[in-house]
Image (cartoon, rainbow, N blue to C red; front, side):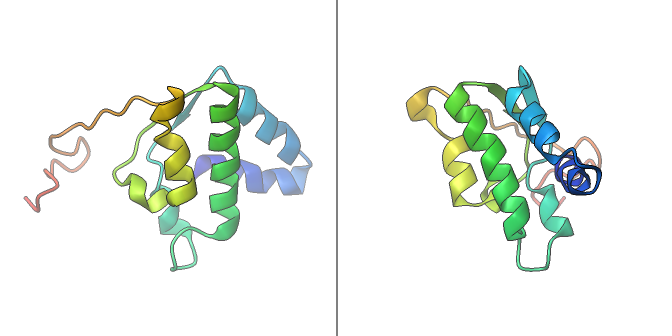
Length: 113
């Protein structure tokens, strides 16, 4: 959500292209809790603008071989196009680690307890 907020603000302050370029070129980009932006959408999932912004950043970084760290509780929510790029093991772009255990914030285990 913070990345999308910065991009939206870029329309107002004229920094959209600069912000987008910084996201493309950062040596390492961390997208924490990817999918959380759904909570700020129009009710039908991720807005098309937000989905396009996320796709552009992920696709550009994958194409350029730039490193990213992505955390998510549910990668399925990011959409097929983004998910395909994030899971691009055919290009050696990704390493997937699934961590099991209770939530750090709530203590819930994910199985309803």
